[in-house]
Amino acid sequence: MAFTAKDVKDLREKTGCGMMDCKKALAESDGDMDKAIEYLREKGLAAVAKKASRIAAEGLVVVVIEGNVGAVLEVNAETDFVAKNETFVAMCNNIAATIVKQNPADVDALMTMHCENTDMTVEEAVRDRIQVIGENMKVRRFVRMEGNLVSYVHAGGKIGVLVNFDTDCADKDAFKAAAKDVAMQIAFSNPTYLSKEDVPADVVAKEKEIILAQMDNDPKMANKPEKVKEGIVMGKLGNFYKDVCLKEQAFVKDEKMSVQAYLDAQAKAMGGKISLVAYARLEKGEGLEKREDNFADEVASMIK
Image: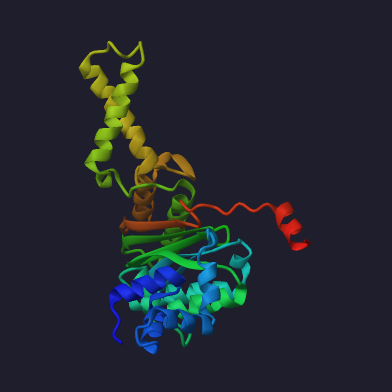
């Protein structure tokens, strides 16, 4: 009996198993949904499916660079202990290497690809670690870049940064040191945009609106002439850009200059050019619901 994409979707929703596993189960079961579920259980995938509902907000961020191609990847697990597991770390690095070499369009495409340094797909490699370690795991997101790349990983995988530069100084130690400084700045300051030109017009308009509303609510400012208010708005927008834009931010090691000014000075000293092209910053568990454990309740449940 034939099966459709909707059948695969329904089986995934019922079992929590991966797409490829569900397709294989339906093929082996001639499209029979109940037999497909039984097949997944017999293959030991039901246990993985049960774990799939558990919160995974810990884990690891890794960065892999090979030549002029790099990837920063976040893989989540349930506890921070897993991030110290050598086989979990190896899996994450293998998946990042897969992204570098095979250039997947998104996470769904990545999961179907052959996982580098293994004889499994990425989905199978993750499932294998789930079964061995006993925690839910999820490949959450990644960014892939090509160019003159520099990376920085903070706190053993809590934050990963990948920065792309346009430069003719890539082989110089001074450039490598300056680029590392910028990567560390990104980890520390978490800029929202590369430069003020990248800030969307609607975001700028909203910021102006907020600044004007603040002045209207301030008795000392409300009656100022419009021309004066506009000047104040532009000044406050400048401070806004310094907060959210990497190039405009004060350089952490010398707050008298911006990041862009720092790079300009370094480029001049080397007799070359250094331009920031792009960056990616992934922080482990950012925006995810955290699991809240009650240790006393957990111990009590174990001795009942």
